[in-house]
Image 1 (tube, rainbow, N blue to C red):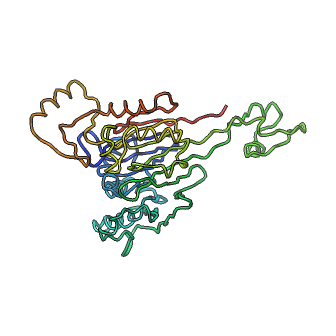
Image 2 (cartoon, rainbow, N blue to C red):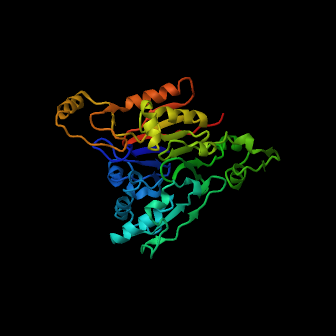
Image 3 (cartoon, one colour):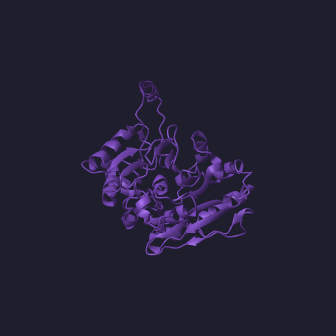
Length: 384
């Protein structure tokens, strides 16, 4: 299993970073995407992800830097999966996602060679900001569906948890986080699998390959040809625990899903601004590195990965890049991001890593910062 960071910037894409989009690739090669900011289909093609292997897209909230790439990516997939008649693209996100996808694809008259479904997470009333109704926007999908659109589910919370998806190998649950609009975090949990069957020991006990192997692998005792009872614990290794990955949307407080996040192998958490700008970060619904680190400690996670950086933070430059930046600094060009920083306020992501590392000192939680197209392996933890 791998996390693939396709976009790690906040607000808008730059020459160095794309906006939010994170891939999760499973061992069978299939990929789920979490958020889909503008230009995500370009980032997918730059990465090791095969577009035809993308099967699900999860949206944390309906801000443009997490959403505007979804129609382009869907149409790109339309050129990649034409020979897969059984393919259905599944999309999940807050109420309003179904209308957004339907309107964009219908107004652009975009035909697709595959069907899709949009499943909506219904926010709780107290997730809505005070000015929610002032925009006069209807969140519910209206009018006829897209020709390839299949009915999706409306998913309501049960005890503060949205049960998003589940099959025999993995489940996805969502919890609420605090931002400026209804926002969710997703927790992906693999099922624990039985340990490896000791075939050699079974043969020594006189049990030949056959149906009895499946019986004991399924957790039931069997009897050897000599009449000895063989228990699963005699010939099956320790269980293979499933991995747990949490990917949070934009947030300044995620305490309401703390129990859901607890003991994650990996926590992907935003760190939009450095600690000295904490007040401004919270004002805009965002976090700092120390806020992310403190949450990782409370949730007892093994690894924290920071992403969603303000435009003021760049990767550490090479000497050549330093020279080019120095030459460009005299042009007078200046742009502002959503936090009000401009091109003259440039810092590097190393400060974000340093602040999170300091907050995690003497703990068992490691921390790293994401970069566009970075791939992070998530190993299994084997019981002993």
